[in-house]
Image (cartoon, rainbow, N blue to C red; front, side, top):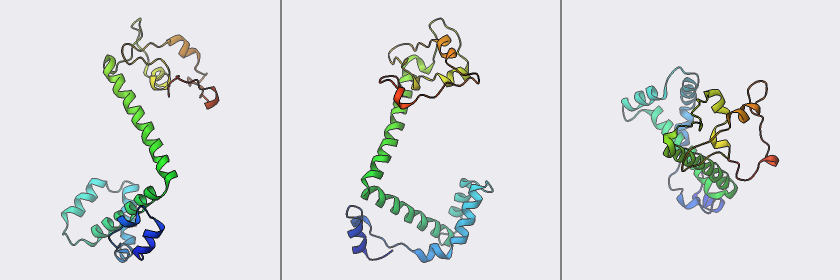
Length: 179
């Protein structure tokens, strides 16, 4: 979408990777069809698998499929250029990835110890609604190498009249108290 030297100057890290010129005319010519396609997906008139099936079953020269592919390439290029050139954006994405990976690691550990089952030392069943409020990912009762102990009465006493646990603020969060 312009001279390559302009993009290499604006995006020193990403510019050299930009090797193909976008076909904006194709996207512009089929913009109404692309919006109709997006609306059909958003409002549930068609499923993504149905649309992909129809587009891939049609001839290789289907202009709508080519316009969709070109639009996707433009979006991916913009995202990649922003990622490569903006350190703040990269840090934001890395933080989100770290959060997700930490939660997955915690879940793997929980499923390793006791097969993912959370029980009380006395063997009492914990209601699903209460368990949702005292999930171990949010508390310090996690022991990866043995059992998970929950003081059921204490946790119930902390719930408000609607059965919800009050939210913790960052100022009152103790180190080592979970996520």
